[in-house]
Every structure is written in C-alpha cells, then in structure tokens.
Length: 102
Image (tube, rainbow, N blue to C red; front, side, top):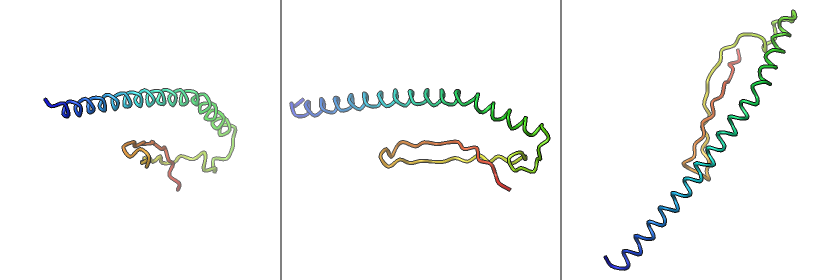
C-alpha cells in the first residue's frame, strides 16, 4: 500500500475513534439528564398527592361542585415535537396530559 493511502486510512481511523468518544460522552450526559428528570418527578409526587388531598377535602366539606376544577372532564393526550436547529438529529417528545375544555 502506498504511503499516501496509509496516511489517509490512519486519519479516517482517528476520525472514527474521535466520533466514538464524542458519542459515548453524549450518551453519558443523556443518561445523567434522564436520572435527574426521574428524581424531579419522584420529588414532585408528595406535592401532587397533598394537592389532590386538599382538593378532595374541600369538595367533601360541602363546597359547590359547580367549579370547572371539580367536574369530570375528558383527558386528551397530545404530543409536542421539538426540533432544535443546533442539533438537527435531536428530537424531544413530551407527553402532555391536556384537559379538554367544554
């Protein structure tokens, strides 16, 4: 093999190895973000339960059920698709629990 081709192949190998390292670092960062997001969700559970209990107690205390906050409503699932211009291949889907207004 000629010296020029060998040099080109070595350059390609280094390029692939560098890309592999960058990809691995990005995977580690993504995993860290997922763990942090899960921790935030778990931390919000007691707050959510307490709010639900307060609303339930208010409703049981004889309050009027005319409030739209206390009525039964249909839940609609929607998705939000976000394309970030700085990272064209990065797509984030957020599940939204939207409530239909009557």
